[in-house]
Amino acid sequence: MASSSSRPGDFYGAAAYRSREGLSTRQVGGSDEIQLRIDPIHGEFDEEITGLRKQVRQLRNVAQDIETEAKFQNDFINQLQMTLIKVQAGVKNNMRRLNKSIIKEGSNHIMHVVLFALLLFFVVYFLSKFSRR
Image (cartoon, rainbow, N blue to C red; front, top):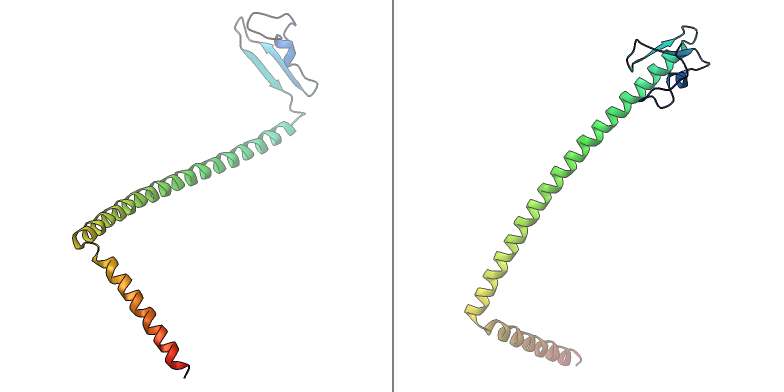
């Protein structure tokens, strides 16, 4: 067993690692290494370690699944952004063409729409007047 005196580099010394559950430590030679011995009486530690390993494995699998899903979502968002940029460019080009055609044709289209609306109003007015008789 190690002495309870503390060396530089040891926070509490090797004695801080002693346990009532069968764990004990001792220093190896003059180095800073500590050797850990587990008494076979306390075999439940093996089961706990195995359980912890399974949980760590499950957490690793979940983390990998999350990473895969995040990559998929990022790729999907990037594709959506590219599609949106293409659509915006198409709309911009169509608006430019429409403006050019309106300027080229002049304001005759507006005059035609106004005349059509007036004609339609008079037709509905006369139909309603003749249908009362």
